[in-house]
Length: 477
Image 1 (cartoon, rainbow, N blue to C red):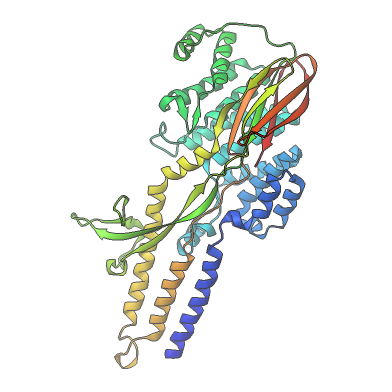
Image 2 (spheres, rainbow, N blue to C red):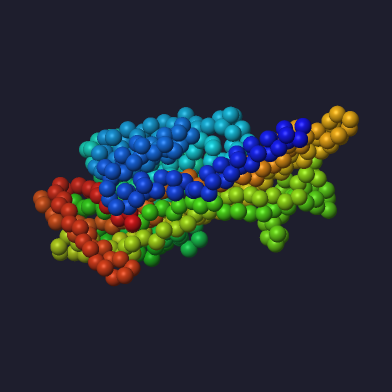
């Protein structure tokens, strides 16, 4: 029996080493070649890297693959293909991702082995890119449909939380975008409703700042203007009082206006963070997890255990959880000029802030699941090792059971891995501005400045048609 025990231990050890080596790599490390091409602006090469990346080809990473493929195609100017991928991603989300077996795999191994279901703000960003794609393809009706779906997404998101005002249940930027799309279609009634909804999100937030983004002055002007155009005098007066602004009607520019979105930097990446907890019994007999300093206290979820749970087998637990690491953008300011007027940008969406805060909000709930799962595993290991004692021939220890117990212990320790996946080609933040256009040809200049003082510029040609137009530009480095 001794040789059986040795063989089981060896097999467990080598399996553990393999899991450990795999576990040392984050998702970002494993697809670094793709992000390198995206940052360098080599979008065609980035698409090729996606197609040959084995990790992203796995079924559990299908949503990530579709979102990255949609974004890379959008950046390359292939808007039709981009929306094919985003529509497939949308359908995947609507049908539901994962299931009972997916949850079992996550419990037995780690969350990284489960199907990726997307961060909530990532789902809103799908609508942003889809809407722009439709606008650029002159498919106005499809862009309007996408704008309407933003409200449905907000409703679905809000249904997940009881404390909707304090959780990320609506996306103010998406509601603003919705208003802009309606306005571009000259639907000022729906535009006003969307702008008002965006304003209300800010008004309910502390200091009128929603996840790192202060209410833009441009949004204030938009809601005032559309209230006036609709003849909503009471609403106009209300917002004038709230903003401390007096609306003054003026003629629209002959060539219309350009709404310019500047997508700057890259979204933060996820890395693994380790925590050490103990399972202790409180004065009332309830079990809870606590870290070394006692600053984190999480109740034990009895629903994950069964009658065989043994507290003696759980002394300390090593748990992993993802943490975001921000990437400093190369550029830190920009202006836009039409030759006669220069305007500044206002931040519209802070994806960095959204990522950090939404992950922090669900820490206690998700860490509770992680710790309970680990405690149940440890209890099972303990029961298996205890069963081996005196269960062999002549009352001797059962080497097979003991070896399995140690093997299970090593596997549990080294297979534990945080889910470090996320849509990493999103920008760190999105800023926007409006600039008037003259009828016919317009030369628009974007001036960029880096933290070191380096200045660069990009010039685009826009034909003024008398309507509201859109343009987005990415500086993903």
